[in-house]
Length: 461
Figure (cartoon, rainbow, N blue to C red):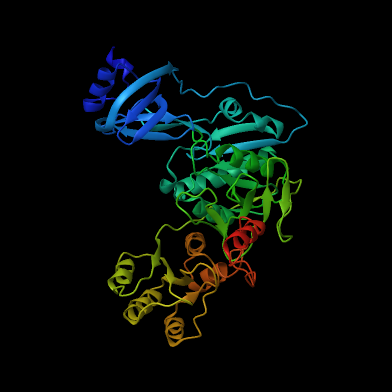
């Protein structure tokens, strides 16, 4: 067999395939010293090792089989896969709302190219219709790729571009906006867009996926359907994050952009509202508000786009034995703002007091948040907090550290007058500071109280 029948395989793995008389895309039964595996032989990533054969098992999951463990192989079929996502013209109707999907690089609908290991995204309306045809039941969809970056590479340039694109689409008259985004820094982008885009007349819904579309446990299609419905038909005209609520695909939660955080590296229900409760649940058919204090959809096209931003701001996560030079280096490098995620009610050790005093005296805005995430900064309770207050550190109430960071960047983009900055920081724009936290919010699994009760009933004896 020609080598192009063994896409990406080399070394011992290539030799083993040739010895066994099978090739890529063969459906096989492989017997090994560790048991039997049944599935389709996949192309091997060009950067992967040469000691494994990769199977797509019939349950949808992939497994790597070590060539040294293989005792026999039986070919039971052959079916070559094609990576191109099927594309059909997206059907439109004048009765349906118009939604724009802005792409930033997140792969909300995608397939994996096993040869290169690259993810091939579906992005045009036709591709999305081919991948998730149910979207056509909800809206008329238009897409625009703003840029293609991993979410860890999102920053001021991308945030400003996105905010301006949102303003342009609102002016063009769309009914809602969806932003496809990688999940790792989605809460940072949701936070800054909540300040850069104010008083929107329509929903702005951020969405991503924890698991790619070729996996049987993928959340991509359901998340996208829920997000598009919230943008097209929802009444909540705010920056929202729409991701899995419970562990199963019953509904998504709509989280306010200033109170949401990614809380698990791989769990599908990774996003949680912190210090509050989610704004609503969303399914592909229905949006159910969980609270009343949200901004409602309007018929006008008025929106305030304010993209001020100061890049010389740092967020510092305090840890025991932190040395003064951490703060001193920021002062020496002319940083304009520092957000501290302190312990407990907002504390750091005594060696940091003096460099923090110097920072404030130099005109650097220093704000305290809590690394517990839930709860408020209360620096008047202990001597440590009172000493820091006296040094000029400003408590940021119950702002999440990342939200305080992006808001301080935004505030310093307007002024370097510390009193004006303080006024901006401590004046809530969209729920980043709340008067109180829900009495039961911390103890309730936000994916759904019935699930918690079911768990307790089955596991508490």
